[in-house]
Image (cartoon, rainbow, N blue to C red; front, side, top):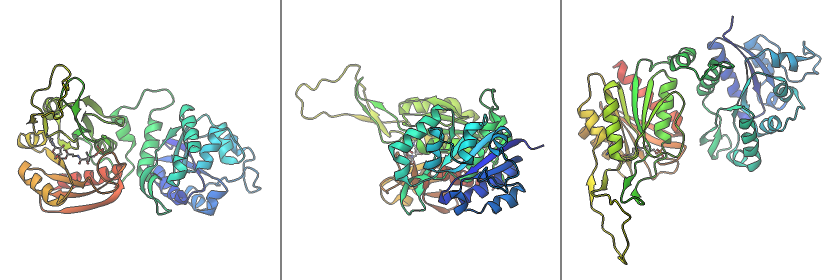
Length: 420
Ligand code: PMT
């Protein structure tokens, strides 16, 4: 008996071919999948492909004489636990959001009582259009779950947000949603981990406990002013999410971030470098892997004023700064047996050179070196470009990719280190 019954809806975008891989992964995760397609989707992928893989009729049009079930949109919609749309075009999102039911898939959406998850894929301009975003907001308010599109190079050769999320992540999020069941509370870490085993060792971090610093810090000058940086937390949270999905227990010490933490991780807030240092000290004993993704201030005002510093007509204000605790170095120096320590290096020139010297000075196992001046890399971007340095002298080039994909690549190197 299959674990879950999934209605896979395929719509007419260039990413339609990826629905085949989603189907295969769902079947590997012991799901029973039925496929429906919009007429436009059949321009990109033949229904026969899905029929061969599911051994079931692929529904495009209710009224197709070949369709064995004249009220398929009712039966199909009632016999699934999840309606998963991959890819979801702006058109189908608009139809769902406005109750348009002029084809099989849009009728099925209105007729189903199952959970619904959509994975959008489209040109960045289309994705960012107010009309599209209005429809997305409406669907989220209606309870539809989204696998957010990622940033990267799109089929139309532009770079930006709109690319279909990685197929394995789509499947992991779909299964994770199903694990929650109709009424149960959010799945426990173990439940999600057990269910997400879709082959190829994707639970390769089970048993690890990650401690990750994320985001920027704020160093007070006085009660009004502070010194900070541009870190959004996206990179660190991406590592946290990827590690949790691959089976690790994850604790995040988060400074100032502009995005929300992922699900299934423990979050400890720490605003200043001192706060972050104290939080890491309190948590490090249980960690098997430490990742320093945060942009921690190297210096902070030596004496933060208790009251707002008055200008008094001064043209120049001089601040005396003192060094902050180097969290990464301290963790590395005091590591317990078997712990892996991974650092990041945010550089503007001689990136690999500076990163390698950091690795040697701090005794790190891996360093992720990113040039924060490169377009699409560094602070507050959805993408990054980096080089992973290993202690054995290796350099793994990571070209422009989403931070979520980069996170998986970093974890792949951690798994490689573990395997020796
Ligand atoms: O958060 P995003 O907007 O996604 O941006 C991601 C990022 C650019 C912040 C990230 O990719 C990154 O490069 N993080 C490290 C930023 C940084 O402070 O680099 P650094 O070269 O100054 O520090 C080197 C290492 O020491 C880092 O692992 C840092 O976390 C750590 N450090 C630094 C100072 C300090 N007092 N304690 C530390 O632990």
